[in-house]
Length: 197
Image (tube, rainbow, N blue to C red; front, side, top):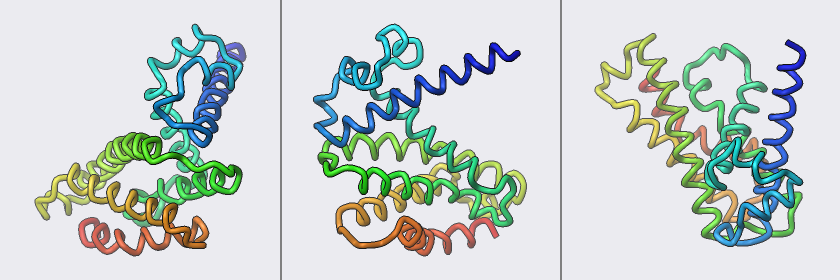
């Protein structure tokens, strides 16, 4: 048993190194110009180790996004009082994550890199939100009463989040991550409360 735990820690450490390497490279150069060899050099990880865990840099990117979201799950209460809060638990950790990179780097992500990251982020968020909504619908039945497909509502929530995220990053508004999160929640909570209440 302890050996399995240390193996899990080694895998987590390796994956964290790879995620960090890709994230730092995205802030330094065009996403399309990043090759796996550079990620490996930055992370000090071997090629065979990389391919044991990931098919390509896109899968590594998506895995990194899922890690950020899992970190948010660990910091949020296990049982939230409101279903809407549970569905939106992803937003503040992502704003905080983006803010750490914005403050820690003098480089900005190029438009193509941002588009690729946001495409993957939206796909992961739609999946996560739709799962939460399906669970809420089973327990409350309100979604099915409203004849609102979970997938459509999940896309609406994820799209609104990305609109706010892009506005926050591109406008240079001096908002804290918490305040940017409040803006997002102000736009989306009325819809969720109506559907989930």
